[in-house]
Length: 140
Image 1 (cartoon, rainbow, N blue to C red):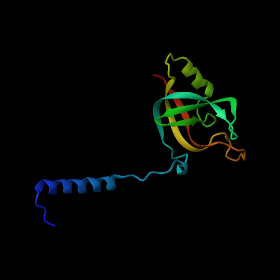
Image 2: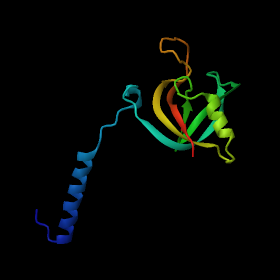
Image 3: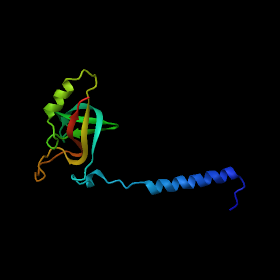
Image 4: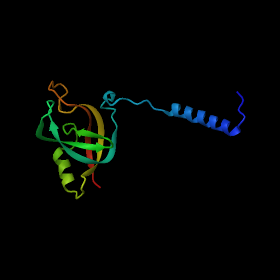
């Protein structure tokens, strides 16, 4: 194939090079459910913490409130029984802030699994999905 326009030829070469670089540098993503807890990565985030009413599987609202970390377009349930801090510690930290939106800077770990079960061998029904555990509160 003969290219008569040198600028077009340059653009084609740049496109092929950038496309090949994209495929060569792409990393295989591991689904969260496949992450071994010993290989899990912690990250530091600053995000709003919100309280939501627990809704049973039958759709009825209860008096129980759960805390969630709002990250981008998803809210992550905070599982305190696996966290290194207590719910009370997080609530006290948030209460000391005068912000309209209660935000916290936290070292967290994203996980996927059962929310209501703190014992792996427990057969109780549980909500499940993506959640976070908190390693520590970072004071700022």
